[in-house]
Length: 380
Image 1 (cartoon, rainbow, N blue to C red):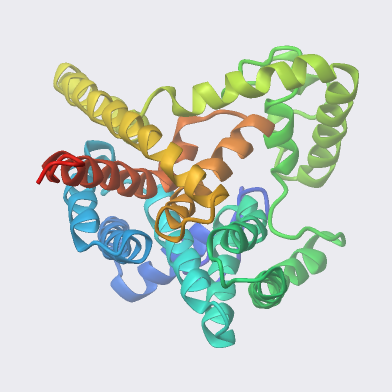
Image 2: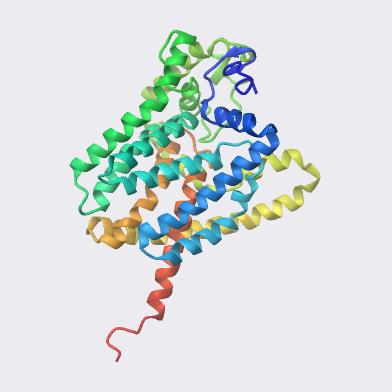
């Protein structure tokens, strides 16, 4: 509301950069236009869902050349309970999924076209303001494209990455300049990077998020919790130092936790229902029933996507054009898994990868159906 009222990005009456500004700025813009925050949240989420589903169709055509794959994935995603549960929540996941997916699509479609790459970079810049880790995705995407597309040379991949990153910085650097004016220090997007690192590297590590503010993990810094905003730069530095020191002192334990964090990241799919538990406590049995149905649906999609992974990556290695393109569907799943391994395996972090996994699962179903209906080899 402070942003919409022109008072700047504040928390507790003080200028802040603790949380990334992207999502609050999107909400503020929507509220300025619509005039109602509940309506703003609902409209933004519905438009994000619509855009994501249209992109599912596009990726289905681009990756497989088959409209049917995109349609099956679209139908399944439209019925996906966790996706539906996010519709009325002020959470970053729906809009971020759209932004990241659109930016990736434009980067793929851009190829040698600088204009599309420029727009892709602008979207990646907005995505970085929503989730700062997004800044690492384009370089991985460029590498994947060079491996997948036979006519896409490493020179073209470097060129695409340079254009995308220059465009990305056009969006992000003005916010970094604002932070310099406010704090007197360089802060690219937000000051919660230390928190993210520390939660994944400490003596009470769980592999997931935990309420650490009343534990020695936080109290060691001597900063009262109610001063975390006023002293956010100091806190960020201390948390980064503590997390980095713990990794240096416990390298084996940190590495051993990485696969466990990835398992935690993908173990469940209930993040969209958290708000319902608090808002509708009397409806908990019904919510649980839907959660169980969602979990079964989710596990099925994961299993089918895993089955599709083998032909995708063997196709990439053998430079089989049609199957190699399937590997692009795994860029976001691999990206969020790496983030989970380094930081924490919070289940909501896999949400942006789900449209791609629905597409991979749909491809496997279609391929399986086509192979079972084709005549047996050697039979007239």
